Image (cartoon, rainbow, N blue to C red; front, side):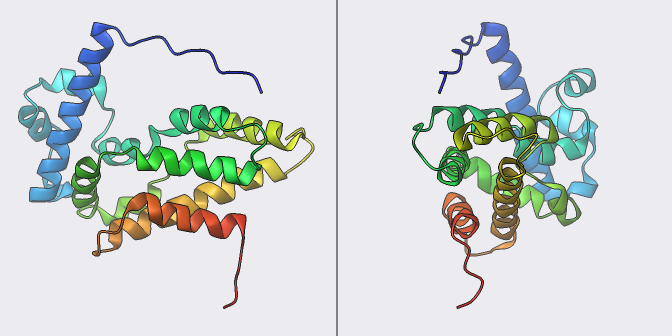
Length: 202
């Protein structure tokens, strides 16, 4: 397996932009949790984050993107983690490990703040997915390479990616709704184990 190219280290400008985005998201989650998603405007969020509305829209397309986009931004990281898994590892195990590793890297305090914000907009939860369409093909290619097949001729890589992320999304939604505050990574790992070793009867 080829080693992925090293990523360019972030510049000062990159770090500043990332900090502004983080401040906007943190402000939005605080306001959503306190007032409810529907009762918070983009102007409210910009003011809470101490940025201008113009700066807000340079970083965020819509209010919904603050909640849904946060879920999908890990796809490139999942692909990179998958590419680094041991070459002899089974495709389903490697993909599951990459997804769980990414989910496990989320800061727990940030997750809980996001969860509180998301609960004020339950209508958006069914649209929250870890798999962005733009990243699907890269993940399918990586899985196909592990299987030694051409994804144009063999549906298994695409099905494995689709099923794995469907399981992760299901676990993610269940975790958001669950008041017991279980560990998200453990819930996702449990769901992915069902994909790898399905048992539909007791």
